[in-house]
Image: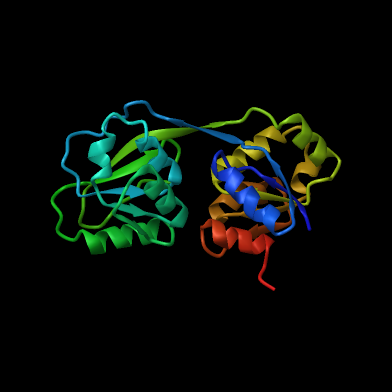
Length: 234
C-alpha cells in the first residue's frame, strides 16, 4: 500500500481516487488545475461533419453551451475512453474512441470522414500541446475551456510532502506537472523525492528537467495504463 497524491482536476480526481482506494492505497487529493468553460464560445457557422475531442473537458463544456442541442446531434470522435465516456455522459449518442493519442484520433477521423466537405469541429482547451490536423480535411479549432493553475498546495499536502509522507504522485498532463512544480518551488527536494507517475513523456519532461529521479511513464496515454504502473496486475 502507498500514500498517493492525485493532482488531476475535479471531477476526474474523485474517480481516480476511488479506483486507487479500492486497491488498498491511501489517497490525497490536490487538484492543481481548475477547469473553466468558456461561456458561449464562438463555434462559427454550421454545418460540421463531426466533433473531435482530446479531453473530457471539451465534452463537459458542451453541457452549458447555448448551442448544446445542435452539437449533441453530431457524431463524436474522442481521443480515448475517458473523453468518450464524458461525451456520452453529456448526451452524445454517436461516440467513437480512438483509444490512443492525437495521432490516432487524426488517423481515425481521416478514415471515417474521407471526402467530407464540412469541417470537423475540434473542441479544445486554451493551453494545448499543438494543433490537431487531419489530412485531407478541414478542422475548425474552438477553445471551449481553459485550465487555471493552483497558486499553492493545500496546507495538508504541503506538510505531507515536507515530512516525506507521500509515496507517489499521479500526473495527468504537462500543465498539471508545471503547476505542481510551481507550487513546490520553495520546497525543493521533498517534492521531487516521491515516485512520479506520468500520463506521457511530454508530461514527464518538466519533472526530469527539475531533477526528479523516480519517473514512470504510462505506455499508452490513458488512465488505465497510468494506473497499471501503480497497481500492476498480480
